[in-house]
Figure (cartoon, rainbow, N blue to C red):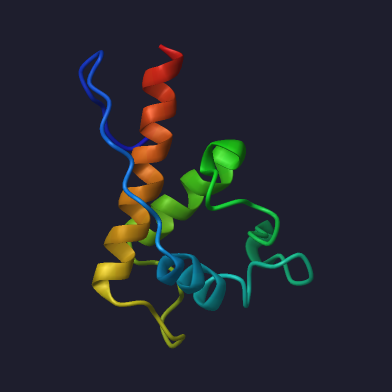
Length: 102
């Protein structure tokens, strides 16, 4: 997971807005769907509202979005605020899972 918090300190999970869910649909699903499965990754059935259920997939997404490696150059891309909001939501949700399991 991408950050660590001292034991017992769980960050509040930020809300994922409809706009951010739509951004994932608009920018990611064009290539990462069940039909194309670009780079062996489909987000079509991965539930962004419950990233814990597909933690390995969303960890990959976090790495790519944090580096702004996706969408690839030449493709439409979300603005910096959307990148930050989506990665913060995913990181915090998954980090909280780790805290709850320890």
